[in-house]
Image (cartoon, rainbow, N blue to C red; front, side):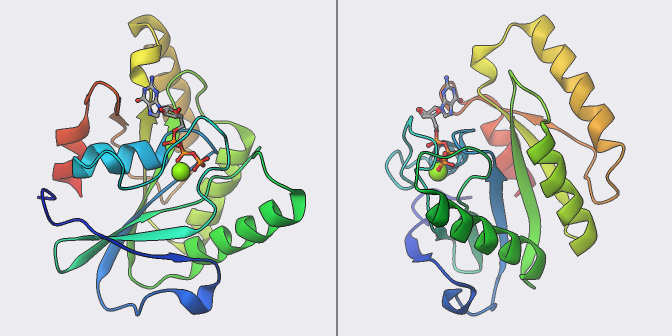
Amino acid sequence: LFAGQTEFVKGVVAMSGLPAPDRLEVCFAGRSNVGKSSLINALTGRRGLARASNTPGRTQEINFFTAGDAHYLVDLPGYGFANAPVPVVEKWQRLLKQYLSGRQTLRRAFVLIDARHGVKKVDDEILSLLDSAAVTFQVVLTKADKVKDADRAKVLEQVRKALSQHPAAFPEIVVTSSEKGWGIPTLRAII
Ligand code: GTP
Ligand code: MG
């Protein structure tokens, strides 16, 4: 689906900078450092396409990538703790919320949850925002290579329980590791 068809389009810092809503898109949201940019690289098969790093707060703009001629993949800044000055973080958090609740062409938000940590309070707030905006979202567990099977099962249970409180949740949870390639073909097919 994506091979050779993915290009960086632009980084957006204000709603007025969003590309025209002329094609459908999916976005990748989640706490800082959860693995959003790495997942986009794994999905597209292009290692350096979205910039990833071990510093929470790496992605500070809404980054648009083409997926073929008719769709966008959207890499979002993280929410929660970030290694950046407070006013800067507040600015991009506001933008993130405006984007998630006000983008007509957003067809699904993938909300990434660390397979070690499960759904935290900040995640739950974003899930409620998506409920209110009637944006269907789907949870993707990331960094599955970092947990034992038994622990992963516990986290999955916790996530399922959290999702049962959210009407906009798509029920299937996708377990991934960008590092190992786990779940990537499944997620590509879903997109
Ligand atoms: P922000 O842009 O800061 O919000 O972070 P992000 O959610 O885009 O995370 P990013 O993709 O930059 O990854 C953060 C760190 O996690 C990097 O050091 C990645 O190498 C690492 N990482 C991402 N995915 C995986 C994974 O599946 N397994 C492991 N072991 N590490 C991963
Ligand atoms: Mg990022």
